[in-house]
Amino acid sequence: MPLTTLFLDMNAYFASVEQQLRVDLRNKPVVVVPVLSDTSCCIAASYEAKRFGVKTGTGVGKARQLCPQLRIVKARPALYVRMHHRVIAAVETCLPVAGVCSIDEMYCRLIGRERQPDQAEQLARNVKEAIAQRVGPYLRCSVGVASNRFLAKVATNLEKPDGLVVLTPADRPGRLEALDLIDLPGIGRRMLRRLHKRSIRTVRELFDLSEDQLADIWKSVIGRQWWYWLRGEELYEPPTHRRSVGHSHVLAPEFRSHPGARAVLVRLLYKAAIRLRALGYWATRMHVAVSFLPKGRWSADTSLGMCQDTPTMLEALAELWRDNPGRGTPFAVGVTLYNLVAPPSAPLPLYPAELRRLQLCRTMDDLNNRFGRHVVYFGSMHNARRSAPMRISFTNIPDPNLPA
Image 1 (cartoon, rainbow, N blue to C red):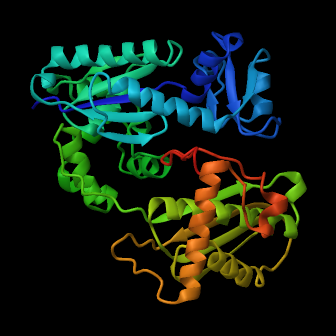
Image 2 (image 1 turned 180 degrees about the horizontal axis):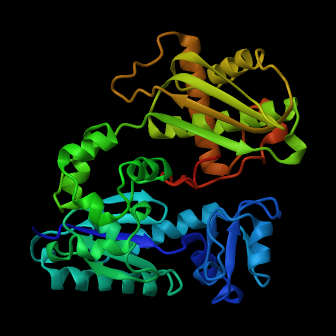
């Protein structure tokens, strides 16, 4: 079974970028946070910080207790995106990047002699060296090579940080037994509980299950896919279709009022609409949600027809907001455009007024792209235009050139 995939996982990426760019942070325990507050949580931790028990999701106050000498840095998402593209460029001096999985993960396909173990290992070393030379030596990565993408990703977890693992058929499942079940991509806490109920607690026990048993545990065809993935088979991956575009945000104290929450929702909707147009999709429905303190939640959704323009979405938001029960203090808000339609399935607007709205939005996008963010914007987001700054999710890499 030939080696087909080289998978790359940047180690403690956000913290490593900060250490690369700031000499004073090198070899120090560092965490990256969304806001400089003890009530916030760590979104990345350097390996020096992890040695003290600080990890992603640890509260800042708790992290300070675990590591008094901790260095706390406010996140700079646009910078992490730019460095991400520099990493891709470095990797592509060695071999093409076939797919980007997240801001800190990507994979390459191997062909011909590259599939031989010694050649694959040398390519992996070349990739690591290229990143060190072209981006910086403090951006370390773990590289896994295997006969499918699933196992190549799993291999990156076997040696961290700065690891390199070539996983051959002879290594399965023995080499994988060093991992816990939750270390396998796709097994979260809910699936872990389901496996434990079946008395499955080790990778070996998972590997020894039959195809039918795995399908029964997963309650879907995904279980059968796992049977093949664990054995190194390369399965066909159909092209994916984006289902939604959205943003959510925990409100800053000055926006924890109903007018403030509505203003930030407008801002989030503005960002989502820009992304929607940049991606070339049309939305047919919109979902809005507000969480309250001390507890409680309100949500609603509505039809948008076949929509890509911001004014129509703002009108739909205003209509939904009239039904907001208004109980409690708003704490977090979110908006999602979903049931997306991609060209050529989406028809152009039929009515002149709809076409003018779309042309207006595209002109605004162009002006903001050319002259800077917020050169032109809708007045309803004026007071909140600096709120909800760029964030990086696990699977979405924002475009720093978009005016959002």
